[in-house]
Image (cartoon, rainbow, N blue to C red; front, side, top):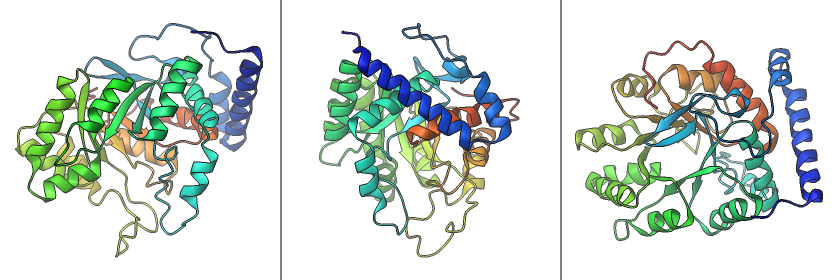
Length: 323
């Protein structure tokens, strides 16, 4: 695999420098102090052992995988903004996240210790992740968000694994729908297909009832992908929902997940941008999440890593680390 040209490398360094400067300008005094002490890894350095990734970001395990406690989410990249009634935001995201912008974002994630991304299975992601690995020498791990259908449980899974995904999980909306229809066995079959393909397998849910149904059915995924936030924003609880809340019962979720001996990736921890990471990250980790999946703009990556490290420092959890 060829090395990047000098002009590309200079452009990349200029972009990273601007992103670091932007993060520093937006951060608090305490966060700027942490930023100043963040060491950048040498290019081409070997992946460190679990527990210490570049930038001092802790890591855990999902099956055989070493996974950073912060995982890069893919909704923003794919143009899914959950922007409530702002109809222009999703097209804006698609215009912002060009292939080159996504590459730069992933590179910044890797340099700051985020070694895993959760991304959809669609034509754009297939092109972007293939180019990032093959043309840019990227190493970020891909856990695929798959959307099996009752009539076709395999296609998304096979496509993702063939492209190089190291894991896959059934998307939360699909999981919720199967359970609501009384078809939890479809989730078990999808999980079997994922594992037969030789990668780690997970089950996603927005509703706690979905996780409860999976447990009652004896399903044992390698991880759960379950929403968690404290609903501390104005649109939470409004009826009709109008795309305004993604964790209906946080206290019940926390209590139930405390007894689940399976790694938990929490998502929607910021209420789709309505909760500051300083509060959202600590809330999720303190209340049992082993990992958090967060959609990030490039200019947010450094600050998010700093805030995650701060949230994890001396954390008092009621649930043991399970990943």
